[in-house]
Image 1 (cartoon, rainbow, N blue to C red):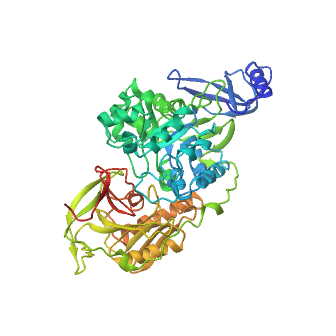
Image 2: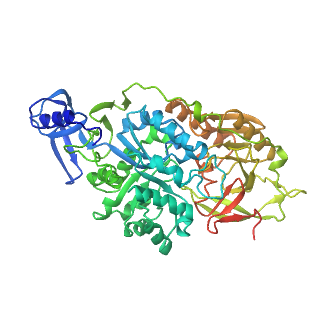
Length: 581
């Protein structure tokens, strides 16, 4: 319980004892009890932002008729990158709170990879402008690996001061799992900073198993959101880890993991979105959508709510929330029923903050001057996008539907007399480039992408997990050159080009990652980008045209990726030439 003083404690006790009216009484509701797994009729009394009691004999200075709605604890997203909503924290809160989300465990490693701890400080300032409770983890991998060119480096020494903040739950997803397994000195130092402060350490271990998973868990890694199969989920549960079951805009793992949930292990299951775009939030929802998926699949509604509330609070040691009980924060969502989970009203610390799907408080936004102007690209020529291949057989990153993992494919391509790649419309192979954008180094990595489907023009973006350099895909060097320069001119974001002309774009001036516009406008802009990519450029409709590209430089996710330094084989954890063996 935060900011408790004797007067507050005294008023809470008096209200609980009926000596004074409660500040708020929510009556005529069905109370979802995640401790007992039951639902009971009753009223909830709130004073000083905390629940003080249950009972129909309570009276309040303010009274709210729930009209039979189901009162549940406010929902908690166990792992999300707010930056991947392409909106600022204030706008993100405005979108998710009306859906019943009252707390998120956020890892701001996207913006910290661009601006370092100044980016972290901006996110804290922005979060203060929203009613949503945002608990930021300290990013563990800035950069994610030693093989990347990020905008900043945050080492174990840098982490010590912010890690000591009581509002910081712990260390963000430790993506460099080889660094732990191979006992990298700096990675072990980071682990020790968190361990010595008794903080939670989040994991990120796609396809890691056996002895390597044992070592990872033994290092104190508490969670993992990268499970894509029930076996991976069971492997982690057996090792005492929490599994964050993910459903986002790009990754849809939850539906595959539900069969592994049992009445015994569900207490170690959390719900998370990881990356969720405005369009997905506005159309499908947030953690409320996870609840609908669970119940539709046959999971008990109260058990489902427990995975979205109490389990997460216990994992991250948020002892003041996660359940409806005396002494807990009055973070309460009123659902119309326990199947559709439509939020009729949302209360945070006893204050009604949303009703009928509308965010109620007015708010301003934090200044962004310290996190804009992030495009520092060394001038380059179109000739620098040329390749000088020595073979027609090349490696290609093969896109895998509904996920961020890729396959390492071998394909045959056509070359010109200088060895440069020639695009062939009847083959689903295209050139992909990654350009360093933080320190004017001039580094450009070139490779191939398979099954993206583009037939015309080029797509360029500055959202490229996790170092967030420029990614560009196109049918010719000239189209790619035009797209990259247009992207630089608009301070980052997304650009689509055809015949050298911009045909759709969305600027993201906040670190090249987030817009300063309302979420609805960002969603509209993304829809235009998607529609244009499909209709004008011929991108495959099986592919999410923007977020799919964002993950092509994430070199800690198997099997093949690309960075500013070239193509990277994740299984070897080393760079490989574009030519196949």
